[in-house]
Amino acid sequence: MPTLKLPPEDFEQECTSVWSFPRRWNWMTHNSKYRWNWSPEVVRNLILRYSKEWDYLLDPMIWGWTTAIEAKLLNRNLLCYDINPNAIELTKSFLDFEVYNSTKIEILHHDATLKNEKLKDESLDFVLMHPPYVDIIKYSEWKIKEDLSNIHDIDKFCDEIEKVAKESFRVLKPWKFCAVLMWDTRRNKLYQPLAFKVMERFLKSGFTLKEDIIKVQHNCKATGFWVTKSKEANFLLIRHEHLFIFQKL
Image 1 (cartoon, rainbow, N blue to C red):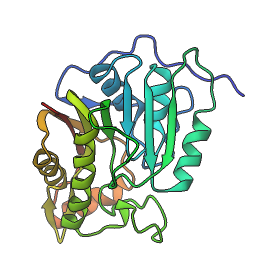
Image 2: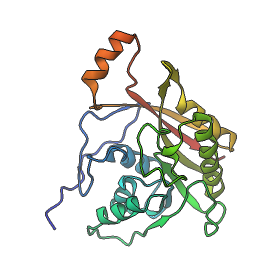
Image 3: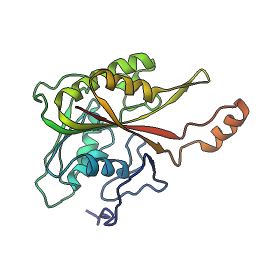
């Protein structure tokens, strides 16, 4: 195996409600060529701030393996799910490196909207997830109908997300946190506050809102094309995501 770049020793945690990472670092086996994985800087910040070593974490939509890599590096035990078998195999392959700890990373083929009967109530220390943004980016073939990225209707998407929220609330210990990264979108030239619709479903499920972090988007594809369209059709390009931090009181 080639020598891997180690995480930065001088990594500093974010301390404001706006997070911006113009340059995305690819330490260890992180790889930014897959559009659906969130950046290591985001996940590292979340894990360091909202959990401690040897805690038991859950990522119910592992998609791009970032959480698994960071959990292994930061000495956190992790249970992660994915509905797409290909994502599971990719995640396993990106964990093929050695670290000196006894962290346990378990990867299951499981639908995040369904209850995991093996997980006891209030048994987890932190839940974090990067759900799909409706069907903006497809994460699997359309044949995997349970894949949330195959849902175009925003209300139906939020109905499914609410199931994830309820299960997250069930398994999370009191006073612990749940982090959700979500983007907004446009439909018929109108702004659709998808992030806030998702936020409402988590609040409805029993969570309280601890933080609303604005994550700035950098290096978005087709920027030149859409800049021209923005001027021609008089609309602003969406260049931010909402990173909600929920707490179970």
